[in-house]
Amino acid sequence: MKSLVLDSIGIPEELCRGVPPTCEIIQVPPGKAVPFERVRHARSWIVDARTKVDRAVLDQLPHLLAVSKFGVGIDNIAVQDATERRVWVCNTPGVLDDAVAELTIGMIIAAGRKIVAFDRLIRAGAWTITPPELTGQVHGATLGVVGMGRIGRRVAQLASALGMRVVYHNRRRIRDAETRGLAEYVSWPDLFEQCDYVTIHTPLTDETRRLVGSAELARMKATAVLVNTSRGGVIDERALIQCLRERRIAGAALDVFEQEPLLPDHPLRTLDNVILLPHVGSATERTRSAMRELALANAVTAAQGERPSTTINS
Ligand code: DGY
Image (cartoon, rainbow, N blue to C red; front, side, top):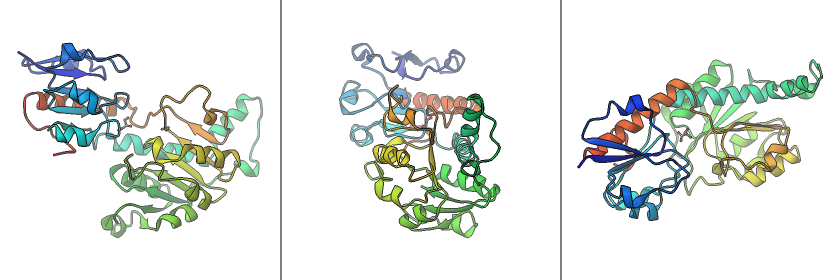
């Protein structure tokens, strides 16, 4: 019998053709019920953020050897339950750092230099040159990076090249980033007090859920902007909405939300001081294709009984 690989991301046919003849790929579209009876013998499963892999689901797939995530965030996967069942959880680190970092910088510039605000004005028939509230500053401003992993570091590099001062806060200090002059370490309160822009690059875990809440927002400057391309759950969204409504900070630029897709009547959609994107941090052609290749390679390797290259639970 062939080793079965479930595909919930829609691997293109030409990639599937490169899979060894000992493996069979079956598509299981996200959002549709998984036909567990039919795929019970599956050995690996490729998923993206839309598929929740919890204990109940794992119990339906007793022969599973790996859950292969298309992306780095693994907050939709019950890693501990997988580990207890000796199921590898793997993701696609490294290949999306540049894409997410460049989008983050794009959002900083778009919010800081009011690109979206000017665009809205022009479409509304106005032609305004520079009212003071639309004169933002990026060069020379201070950027605070929350989470100095691969993506946080890349953002720090790009921001430095733009002439920004970069500071960071991380669970543990990253000395080499400091000695290389990439970013200065600051305390948690200082990061919010000192920065003109704060950008989030920490994974969503029990420890980071709603990490940025009313206390942190209250410390931010009235001119500051909060940027998030990591996971919506890291910010207390209700507190942020309140803060934006009362214009206690200048704005926010968000690519991720507590609940995705963002509901049509979500209050964030009504605010003019927030830039909204539909979770597209890694959405460049080359990045997505590298992610697909790595996610497929991990799934096929596991289906053949070998350890995938980028497991997070060893
Ligand atoms: C990730 O890497 O988890 C991204 O959110 C997927 O695009």
